[in-house]
Length: 274
Image (cartoon, rainbow, N blue to C red; front, side, top):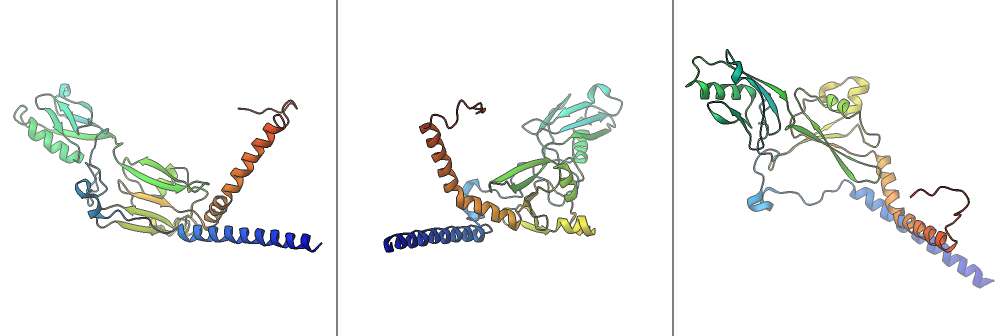
């Protein structure tokens, strides 16, 4: 009898120890959720280092309000009194467009006004008093990068083309709102730079509920928007991670039992799918 009680006590102690272990792992997970991995320091990459802005070859200048063109964008060029020379041009992979008289014109990294001035100079030997108008038709080279965690804690990314005037709330409207697991009180907008990145912490809920729109900032090409999970979402992710081995073991045992019992109910009329 005493042996039975002793065995029960030992099993109870083992269960409590296992529970404490799981709680400790969960606490470590939650505490480390906000910790940083190795920083991507400027000097760590040698010859491959990114030395400016976000890293794109034709990045948007920091103080330029007008979007610069890039590969994949489309522009319409109108040359006064010369309809044969006018038309819509896609910006090629190399950053250029093709035009009569001057062949390839490099336009990537230039604003529409700068492209206009460049074409007027190039065509001036061939056309007297040439007047050019350049209008963007579609812009796909400029994007905003949106990161959020899914229910499993995996970091997901979505890119949103930025065709022009876009605020933070415009961005959320375009993606269908704030994801259900995201903490809308602590949205981070990060403006990447190899030496001096900027991070803006914005309370979107305060904007929506109380109208404090100071945080409804103008988005810029290559902005990184991070939507951190709420406390409860982090807690749920941590619990799921702690019990993942148990869940996997349970599934494995269920599969073994099904095989041992001839399919676990096969032939009872239940659909088993795949």
